Length: 252
Image (cartoon, rainbow, N blue to C red; front, side, top):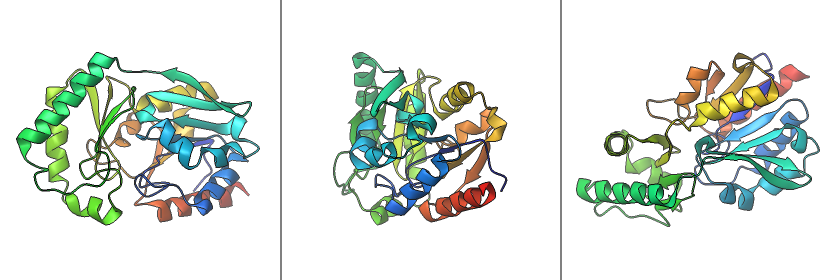
C-alpha cells in the first residue's frame, strides 16, 4: 500500500472492540503514525468516553498537537490539541427540543416493534450527547458475544434504521458499531468531517485514506465514499493493525 498523506480511522470495531478502549499496542501504532502524517479518529462515540479511556495517551505523543484530529458523534464535533488541552473546532449541537423529539421517537418505535421484548441488556441503551442521540439495543456494557448474537443477519437493526429514517426525515440516521443507531443533524455525518479535514490540511481527499468496518448500506463509514477518499474495509482491530503496519513499512 502506498502511504497516504493523511489517514482517518473509525473507532468501534476498527481501532477497538465496540465501546472498548484501544489496546496499548494499537495506541502505540497511532503514535508512530503521528510522527509521519496527520491522523484522525472519526467515530459515533462521544468525546467524554474517549477522554476517559485513551486521549491522555494520544496527548502525550510529541506530534499530537500538530497532527491529531478527533471527530466524535459522527463528525458533529471536532477537537484538536492546543497547549495540552482539547479545544473544540466546531459543534453542530442539537437543540433540547430536537433531542427530546428524537428520543421520544426511538422509544416509541422500539416499544411498538416488540423487537427488544425479553432481550436482556447490560448498561445504558439511550445516550443524549447533545450533538448526537445514540441507541444501542443490548446496552453499552453488553459483552461482544451478546452484541454479535443479538442480530447476526442485521434484519432487526435494518428495521429500526428504516423506521427511524422514515419517522425522522429532518435528521441524519446512521448505523454505527455492532449494534448502535446514531442520529445527528441533517447533513452532518462522517463525509462532512472528511471534507472539513481535507480543507484544513490542504490535502485532496483522494490522497487520504479512511479505515473502517461499516461500509455496508446505512453504515456510518459508507458515507465517506462520496468524498472520493480512499477506503480500506477491515473486520476489526487485528486487521486494522495490519493496515497500519503496511503504511509504516511503506513510509520507512
